Image 1 (cartoon, helix red, strand yellow):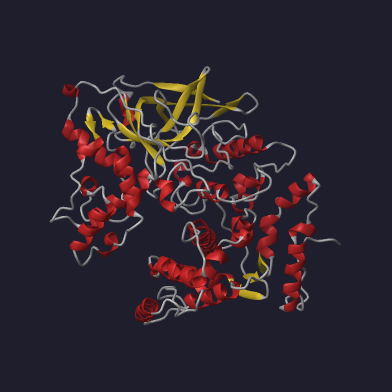
Image 2 (tube, rainbow, N blue to C red):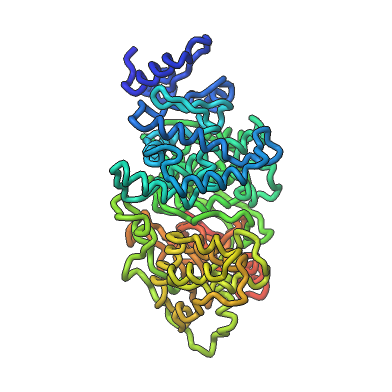
Length: 603
């Protein structure tokens, strides 16, 4: 039987390592499935979970060995011994903190302590095409035992992940300096230091998901209905959810757009998966419509609208997330949910050959001004910082209301709440006032880090945020002239770290504001509210939220949805944040007639 050159190399490597001597049967997708028969492909895809669950072991083939891949494997194996498993784990090391400090000290005095060229080798190792493939996700996450094979070099999957975990936990800043040294001695030049996408993909996606599955056992699926009885909350607070898989899918490569969803179906809860009829006889848009409709009907929730928009290019309904769209709805989803629609229950209806969704809700406000757009993400950017710059001329100023209509004290408070999205990512010192600290964050990176360092002990983390703080600096600079109801945004900031400032409040405010501003556009509305809307940095000027688009509360959805009038209905543009209406206030406004309930027909 003819096989590809890559598969032949894999089989030969497995033979050299005596992997066939135990007499086990071997499943190889490229051979075991007739890829040309779309009916057989559909049947086999439906069996993937069963296949990988019962597999004795899975071999992860990265490709043939390069001159330095062995160095990368040796480095990961060495670093795995410094991973903190916790006191209850069998591999717990009592004096680990001391050993880690010795490791750091050794690397500071000799960057080649763990091998000359080892850090360049690791960067190349993580840049291998294997890590981008979509089909690896279920292979890695579901299977119990995994061996990573690179030529004749092998490493256990958990060992590899523990090695990366050590870098992430104790060498995260130092790794850049070590790579820089290796680049000089090895004569390597990279436009960006690390391929952080694949670094995080292995650590935060593949390994974390696998660890979660181990905790719940092989009966675990996602999204989990057992986490919360509230249908709105089945979409959050749990790594095993559709939102998480959408992000992973968008960052993965698949030759068939339909596999962006089908390739992850093995990870999904049976109650949901049973509603999916795997077929390669329908187009990708129809697959995505089917997936969204199944989610809505299974969980009686419209949370999935938070991931939807009209910009995917596969002609799916705007209420159905396109699993190929490579833009970002948000930087991260906070584990503490909002409650925009209160206790209102979703009552969705489908019509027009299941392409039209009818639901109930409230139009809250209309967008009047928008901050500038992020620059279009592309592979040819000169450096990582370019991703965080903004496109000149894309700011849309609002029509300022008369100053006597504005309570500036309230406006300042609303701005602080909006910039931080009213959610801290770590515990602040002062629960009621931490968000106000955002206005004391300097705009200039050098000034900020100098001020943090001057505060001394306890402020080391903020003082070490070089390059990361730059993202906040670039955002501040681009939005300095954005008008918030007659006042320049820059005028709200003091820009100085207060002498009596508390580190935990500054850290909470910095992280919240930085994450808010990384993937969305700041907006103001006609009725004096401040919020955030999607910034489609995967599209052009016409594929954006615009002045006149609407913030709506949808029954069964925890956040506002930004929508646009279209024919006799609406189009979904994505999730929004609107200060003052995130906890059910819009529904209260219907009681005095300020707002009214209505049916929405969404195309």
